[in-house]
Image (tube, rainbow, N blue to C red; front, top):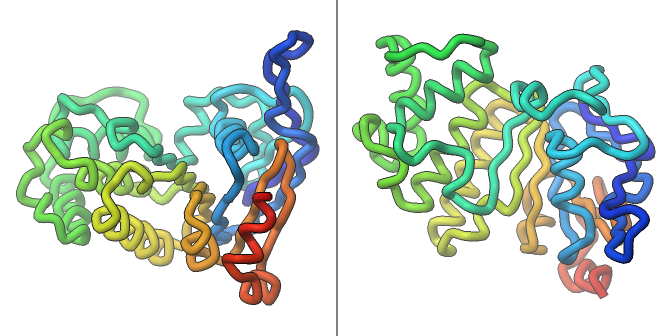
Length: 250
């Protein structure tokens, strides 16, 4: 589904502020893999995510998604196939548009519509109501409420729906529960697990919570200095403990 071959990214090359973001990264994700991505600040986690989504172009190497070389594909074209949630619940949605309008915008963009249309048909509203009801937050009865009036947890839950309303080829979660209180964060995380499992979405989730990194998904990767320092799956992952994993940070 996703493959990195020798991907390198150097920021501020040739200056005193030169920094290696990605150092010849090789990575292969089969369809349906759910990776939890660990690493200290500056390890390359967000740089990896940004390279996939097209925030910048890699200096060297190739990135392939579902058999298509996307190395030089613009960010807006990649976005049709990649869903992404950020740490900040305010990102990824329009605060002055209603819940229904945000969902419609995401649905139409992901489904390939090129023209903006005003108004939402009853069929789409029915789909949105059904999806929102699964959140158990009562938002199916508040579809005319502006997103900016929702709590952080409610907004992140709706943004999760926006990112997956048309099943993406790849879902990227960049510490999407870190800004929420523990109870709300756990609820959003549970919703995330349910949606990923139901739709069998290939997923990369950045987290600093080592317990969650070993509990969620089927594979754990740790980055250091722009490289993949550890790739755990199968028995090696099941036998890994939090204490042992912490030592890799040191």
